Image (cartoon, rainbow, N blue to C red; front, side):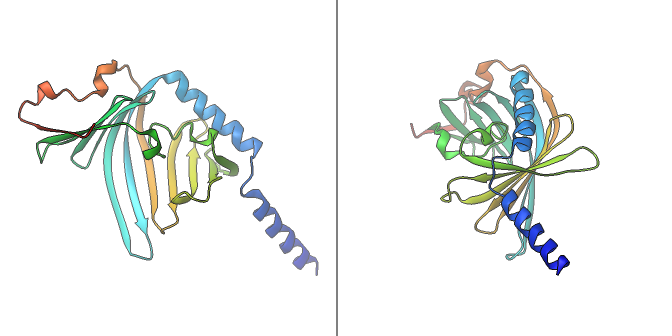
Length: 208
């Protein structure tokens, strides 16, 4: 009987740990966020792995990103995406064209630029574990059930650096982002705008 009671108590503890505003998790998240705010601008390499076990899919791509505030330059899979906070330029070297559209922050819920502050609005959070190497595992649970994903898992090391995060989608897709070679940088604002003058033979398709 004691074993049954203990097992029941353990299940209750596990269930109640999810979907909470865990103060320990908040301390870890705030320290991570504060560190990246002080940096101001950064650049990093990353890998993205998409897994769907039921569909037997396991695909990976690698890229690099530069971030300054709400602005970023993303280079991945033969594309270069420039976001200067107002407009987004998507350049394809293969197609020799660049499309320009108005930046809508709501269309990009989770990015390598906003992941450090994402928890501050619309999420519950819990510290799941602390590993022997000092890594902290924090899970974010979106308050809205209308999201296409139901969980984000962050791996934050003992130096408050975000090493990896995983987005779990309701469709069964799992996106794993690993951040490498992270370093602070100094970018002038024009860096985040695609300079069409440097590519005179590129077709510009403007959707603004």
